[in-house]
Length: 68
Image (cartoon, rainbow, N blue to C red):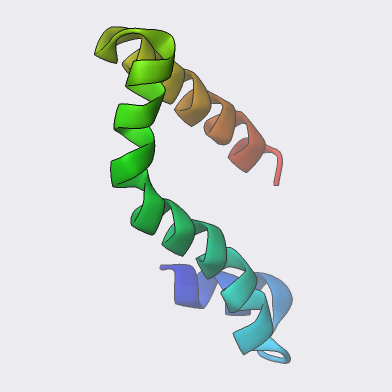
């Protein structure tokens, strides 16, 4: 889906550069996510608080995605 979405919205010129901009944050979170979760749980004091923060970030992402 991502491959066709980039081409449909911004065309095929500079496709690699545009797609790379979108792939970079996904790659970083995929790499550091397993370490960030426990660190956030320690910082907040519980896994429940960490889960609430994750839900809030996901909801915020949905809002941003809606207006992009």
